[in-house]
Amino acid sequence: MKRLNLYPLSENWRPPKLLARDKQLKVLLENRESQSPENFWIQGNRGLGKTLTATIFKEMTEDTFIITCSSSSFRRAVEEFALKNDVKPKVREDPSTIILRVIEEKAEGDKITIFFDDIDRLALGPTLTRDFGIHICNIYDRLLERGYTFSIHLITTKDFKDARKYLDRSAESRLNLRPLIFPPYSEGEIKKLLMQRLEFIDDLEWSEEAVSYIAARVARDAEGREGDMRLALEIARAAIKTFGKLTLEAAEKAWKDRETDYWVEILKEMPFGKALLLASIVWETLDRYEDEIEELEEGEEYYPVSWSEVKKRWRSNAEAVGLGNVKDHRLRKWLDSLRESDLVEARTLPKTHEYNYTNMRELYITLKADLMKLFYATQKIDWSKRW
Image 1 (tube, rainbow, N blue to C red):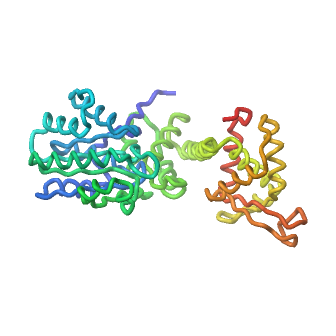
Image 2 (image 1 turned 45 degrees about the vertical axis):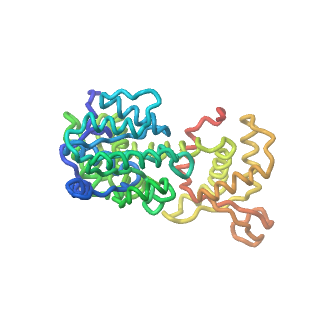
Image 3 (image 1 turned 90 degrees about the vertical axis):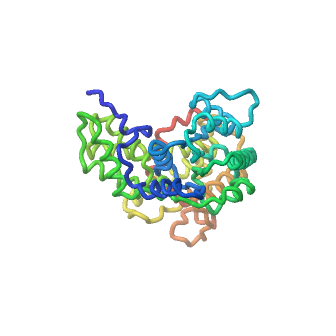
């Protein structure tokens, strides 16, 4: 298989022209030329072009600085930013002072733009660290004192309506932020963006049909990542690496593998016993209703299974992997947690209910997540290796 240069399908590749985000870029450019520039709360889920737009803005303007928050430590982010700009931070130097020194040494004019990218990484719990708000206030005040015309933009996945409680109140008040929203890419936009990148890969065989398939699935069926261009790139890269080309067959296989991996990740993030409980619900559902499930239409609910039978299956599986001494109340807590996550539904069925197969009034569990996607994920996990 010929080795292809897939760099145009990486997140770091810079397209020659920014597509689908030209309106947001225009807002930022016009704001920069204003005599009283505003500060933006740049919001949108991951993979929607926020960082790319900021980067292209930087390439088009002078005296623009992007500080990437790569961990929960604001100091570390600022020190990395300084070193990239050939400014060595001093021991115990205040982060706001470091930023100001970089600006004073590197800026050629008095019109400054600062982006703080991915500020969510600074969050410890439901809010950002208090230090971040303090440093923002210090930066704001010092730039003001030195007579700069400036704007400070915060890039985040959080909704603007939560800005005041997420960000330190004094910092939010200083900045008087306005929202700049990056909505999910549409199917047509994802298709254009993918084709733009594919045209820069030499000797690659690809079809518009495959691109359309990826665009449609990412736009509609990405389970929390709808419109995410990063996901579209992941699918395209996976298809090409497996098949050496981007055909419809390759795209379909890559998408199916991605769905399985997504649910594997969901299961692996749970405590082992809870993940095994969800898997037991899946296996019990398939075992009980396999023939009938094949007749279900899209959007129809799965059939309920008895909680007592699920517990029996769970205990049998748990014993096989050496997980013992788990009380019923712990299983019930895990079940409640699955309900809160909207993965299952639990309700008591009377003896006369058509799906009550235990002939007694009992709790029945109905799977709400996609049965077969979860089943394939359970098959991919080695349950003998507890986590």
